[in-house]
Length: 379
Image (tube, rainbow, N blue to C red; front, top):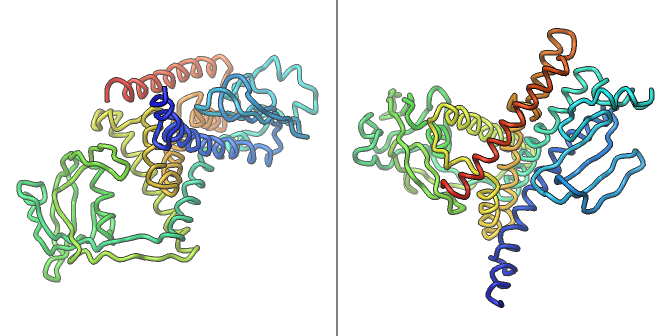
């Protein structure tokens, strides 16, 4: 029995080592997302009936002076903001409820607002997720700075795409597919997600620029959290002599600029991965669900709080992007309908919306089931 308790409650056990870090990461990301909806909705004069972290039965909560019920619910795998006039947590309009509202309530009901207010309120959730990532990275850069190395080729692996393309030791990367690079990490960032794609590299050799073409191949590597990931490589290696590693320290303003850039890179990489995944060019095991996230949270917590906070930023970006997919009942699905409404000058019919919501809900459930299957059985 003591061994069982130790495995659960020790710092590297299931509860303290995995579940608590997982709940911390997920709760922060969900809270910020829903707070975006709430704050912009209130700013637009929309009434809010409930703000929940988690789904299902309420565990604890209170009602504020504006009539909003703030609560922590039993299933900590999401959250929602319910506005006046909503049928459910996905902001589906309830025609019968709207008809029964008083004139004062109709003025603050979500679905009686101009389309731009509804769109701004919906977009605010993912926007706050991106802002959270920027804030985390800005603080991290301000405190720790960043180690960088020069984009130099110290070694070319035998039999690699780089060798076939004609790379030589001493070459310096200038650009990758037309994008200027300043560090070796920049090169890795642009190459790692492009396995199977021919990439144009501009290199500086003996004072002159030359153009080389190489196609990255997939390689299994272990990241800082111990996860086995598949990334594209061309087979070049940097070293301390040519890379000249150094620490760059940033002022708060510089840290913010770097944080925006880093968040932009993550958004771009995530979008690129999803596009390639849809057409079958990415390994499905690279797509993780709640079990994999929990495992990553535990590994990050074991390395230190700063690693856990960085995982919050990465997950926040991922949640923001997924919510912008044009699939009801995700935020992107709402935005799609608002875009159509702004073009045709009238709301999409309730019957059409209901049909799309049903299909979208099934698609979301299928996706959740897929990643859960990946986590437990397939990968």
